[in-house]
Length: 191
Image 1 (cartoon, helix red, strand yellow):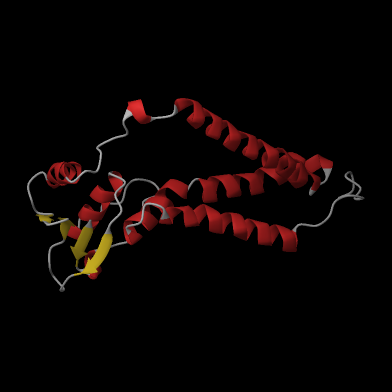
Image 2: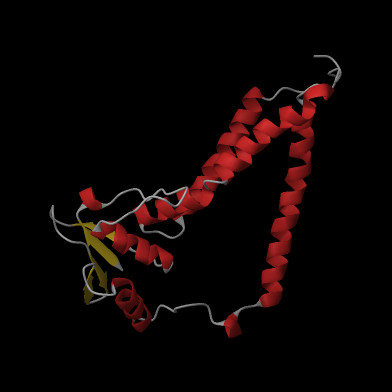
C-alpha cells in the first residue's frame, strides 16, 4: 500500500478528546488505512494534489464516492483479510499469553504503589500518592490510544506506535533513578 499525497495536507492526527476533524484528502486516506491495520508507505505528491491510495496496481482517489468502502474492498481483493479467521486463532495460547502479561503487571504494580506511598509522611499519604499516580496513568496512559494512532497514521507502520509506551517507560525509569530517594530508614511520621 502507498499513500501518494501533498505533505502539507497531512497532519499529525492527535485527537485525545475526539473533537478534532481531519478532513484533508491525505488525512482521510491515512485514517482509512490505519483503521484497517494496514502498513503503507508515504510518497510525496506535488503541492495541491489530491491524495490517492495505491493498492498494488490499483489507484483509488480519496474523492471516490464511498472511498472507505472501495478501499476496503480493494484491500480484501488483494489478499489482506477483512478480519481474523476464528478457526485459526489459538485460544489456549492467547489466554496463556494474556495471563503472563497480567502477571508481569502485578509484579511491578504492587512495589510501585508501596514505593510511592513511602515517599510521603503518613498523614498525607493518600493525596501524596494520588497526584503522581493520576498523572502517570491519566496523562501518559490516557493519551496512549490517541498518540499511538497519530504515530501510526504519520509513519504508515502499524507497529511504530509501540515506541510511545517504550519511551514513556524508559523516561520513567531514568527519572526514577535520578529523583526518587531511598526511604529505608526514614521516619514515616515526620513531616
